[in-house]
Image (cartoon, rainbow, N blue to C red):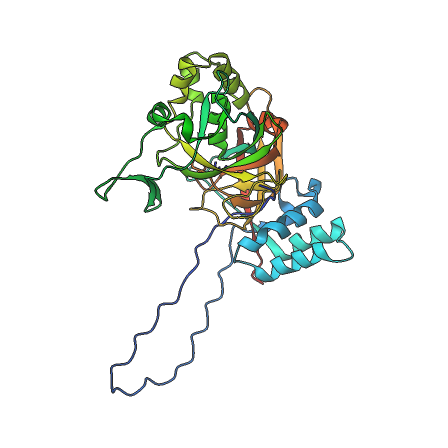
Length: 383
């Protein structure tokens, strides 16, 4: 995820649902012509009420929400949005005041200032919730038989062209960049920023970033730097179709275990089914959470990645997801989250990727999240 997605950092914040408008400039009068008569600016049309709006208090599970935690998440993430600056400033003032708000005051803030607008899929069916995390992995500063996968920096001939990474040719033109298998085949040891187990690097590329611990105790964050411009392809389904894993046993941990058990040519052939490749840069590990695409740290369990075509960074979102069917899955996920990130596999109006935090436990849980999803945007009231 951006992390791929960078997919990753420390606050749960919200998505975007509407595009900003600009007023077209008026043409200048012709030379020598008298100035046009002054006119009164047109009054903006009042916003039309949403017929599908519902009270926030009617959201499923609202009574069981930790409203104070939700208020803190909103205050941290709303600053990246542009829809309700006054409400954002009010929430931030509440959470920074000498006397902290009570749970009842936090609940009243949402109920008095927001309506809930349901998001819908084209066919009216539930969407999909998945989850991601900030992985922590062992790494080495030199190659070894076990740590034989290089963490590569962004190549000099890789450029972003019209929003997509492409290879810059010597003649000045561009061409699609190499796929995963070709990049790995051409990689040289002197290009490595670090060395990892191949399956760990593969999963860190899916997440988009990760935290590395070296044998000497040193720590660093591998942050997303670029990708090869090719679309992400999941390997769970082809592994199931080939009989490598059972259909209901394709969690992230099951895939990782299989890749580790078949490390070498067999595992590389399976990983090559995903042609997308992520390049990294090395940053210090500050001990915090990674930042999402919105540029603010992600708060665990209170931040989601969304599709920017349907949502806006800084949106407050209510999610309800029940009935995950992967082995080891939790029963449900429900609550207020902020839209603060995006990812190549996150597409559609009812699609979200929930950030679960750093480390192994978060990774084990994230790998089993595949739940039917309903989403509501908390929209500022218009009256």
